[in-house]
Length: 508
Image (spheres, rainbow, N blue to C red):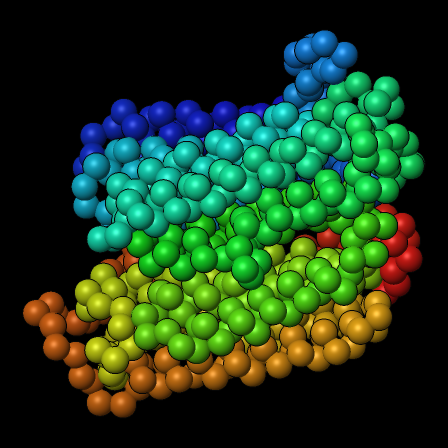
């Protein structure tokens, strides 16, 4: 019952924060978030599982009992963790605690509601990464959308309502398309499955028990369902051309919400792609590998080029996330141990690095009240510590050795190079994206951080308070720790993705 306890404690913490007076809500929410954080670290330290959750692996902390019987189908409370979901659960609890701590300065109104929604968001994310029944998983999936909409729409910038509604419409329609794709597969399996249990559906599909649905034969239905789910999840990732909601959401969202959005919410899309598309329908993924790789590489290059053209620091980081998620898609479609393992590792690495970058920009904005590159110069002379961690985060984005981003991208490139027809070219083009990333980050740093101090502002520019910089220090240490010793997560990730590789004829 450890997963249930983790979710329940987070939900109770959310209600406690809602009911607390505004002046203590932030400290209370931070203190309560330490409970799920400690719980997830204990679960990691005692983690014993093998294989993949959807291919008959042995799961950690698994609970499975029948919940609802609806006609010929039954719904179950089925949760459990494998080597793919365990790192993402830890990532969620770590980033939530740090995001709450970083909220103390920028959030100065309706604090109890804000902190309650942040913990409610964390509970939904924990459910997404641990649920193994589709109905239960879909409830948590949609549950995440509501607090994110409110957090952007109420505490965001001048165009917050536009950004929140755009995000809600895009992701909600995407959820509907994905839902139709998955349910079509379940009905197409006929009597082969009598539940929405994801392992049962996955194994029936991989065993070739799909019978077709209406006018669509099994092969046609598989392809249609695959792309319905792919489009639904690609919006959440986001993949070009489904990415346009993301920069607006990031720019308008307050810093802690941007941290959660880039650090964890985007990983819902890549996690779902791995669980549904690349696990349940590996033959379709392999058949359309070139097309999927085109989406991946376009996201890498186009996202980086858009970042290069921005003048707002936050928008630069937002577009760079689009580029980074392209690497994840490329690693997944490679269907090799290093490719899929590197893609999963990149979910964690990017979560930490993007959180570090958004928090750094937030600290700079809290002091200067501007994020425009053209407005700032020489910030290093006034905020040396904040600038140092910003530079560390930028190095992580560039993929410098001994940092988590380097390990993740190295695994992806090793795994995707030569994995399928044309993959050499796709990998080579994607690697060029690193050069563009380095270009726009170095340009932004040179303009804003170094040289003589120049900034026209009525606010005093100086060192940030301890509670603003402490989360940055923790994130820098974690990024370096995973870069020096990637096996902290990579071993369990490899164990979970290895059953997926032979099915599609992949290799190392």
